[in-house]
Length: 171
Image (tube, rainbow, N blue to C red; front, side, top):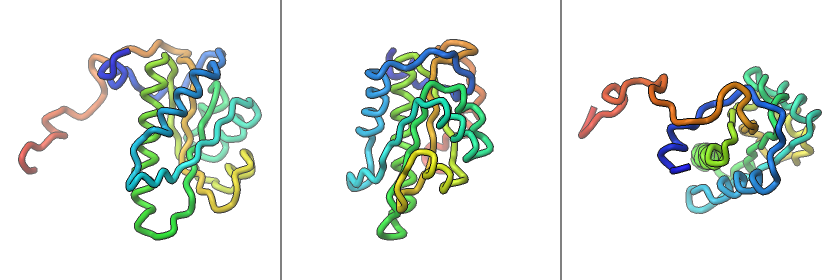
């Protein structure tokens, strides 16, 4: 898929069919996240992957909007080290956003859907995936083949109009 088509086809997928994701495809998605830009090249992230149905079901409990995880083929939990300085906290969050989008676009390129989610219960997340103390469970990205409709460029997305969002030369 061309990059522009992948950008236009990416959507939050919350219904998945039961096909597993090939290891090579999962690794490609993770490699896209690993290659994402980060401030000062700090790369503050670690990615914890699970394809275990029990863990996916348990992860659905760590955020009220994560009800789609039990049906996913895999989930990636994006974690951060507790920052050495407060100024890194915002930079690290931005970096995770870039890693998430890189993985979501790599997934679309492979015909795999994704649905992101926050994490509210950090202790439960750490327990479920044996994540060490000192790591912040920040976000989850569920992955799977769409069960409702295939990924294709969306012609009329439900987005604010371009002229309302973009301000050229000033507000």
